[in-house]
Image (cartoon, rainbow, N blue to C red; front, side, top):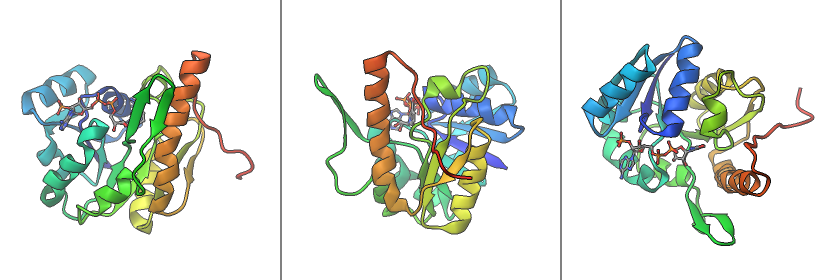
Amino acid sequence: MRVGILGGTGDFGRALAVRLVEAGVDVVVGSRDAEKAAATAAELGAVVGRTNADAARDCEIAVLAVNASAALDTARDLAAALGTTPLLCVAAELSFGKDGVKPTTEALSLAERVQAVVQAPVVAGLHSLGARNLGGDDAPSEDTLVCGDDAEAKALAIELAGMLVDGRAVDAGPLASARALEGLTAVIININKKYKAHAGVTITGVH
Ligand SMILES: NC(=O)c1ccc[n+]([C@@H]2O[C@H](COP(=O)([O-])OP(=O)(O)OC[C@H]3O[C@@H](n4cnc5c(N)ncnc54)[C@H](OP(=O)(O)O)[C@@H]3O)[C@@H](O)[C@H]2O)c1
């Protein structure tokens, strides 16, 4: 598998690259800035650094790991470069206030809005996997959730997700489930703040 991480210079993208390299996956780290991508790739080792557009052109599945506020515009800008390559959206639109972190008030998830601007099949997932847990010494002991409408793209994303955790990559249904998964990011951050924790999720009762 060859994975392009768009916005791979951030905390989440870097942690993702570390786990994927460990699993023997070819990783292309993307950035708006080719030099920044190359520097990050050199630092991480065994990965290549490119502009986001070149990373999108040179992978079997792309992960949209840019800052959530830039996800929709970045997806729109990269739509042609992506073509029909599956796009895994990990972003969650959140608002931060004194009373805690809240999910978006938009009716549709960010992933569904991304799907509206790209031809590529969009899947969504990994929202409950904190960068710190993901980038630790070992794969984190938690499950991770993936959803999507395109069966092939979702199968590929689940294969990728399964390499990241010591638990399972669980199919959470259609892309509309991203409304809940993106909201889960807010839940996890609130739990982490309250309990000074690094929380993740485990789904029980699934064999
Ligand atoms: N951090 C976590 O624990 C975590 C967990 C689950 C999901 N996520 C999701 O993963 C994504 C990345 O998280 P992060 O913490 O790594 O974010 P981040 O560090 O804030 O941003 C990641 C990268 O986004 C790019 N970027 C920033 N502003 C941009 C803009 N205006 N246009 C295009 N690209 C821009 C930057 O790359 P360049 O400057 O190199 O272009 C940056 O390195 C987010 O969508 C977040 O919701 C994060």
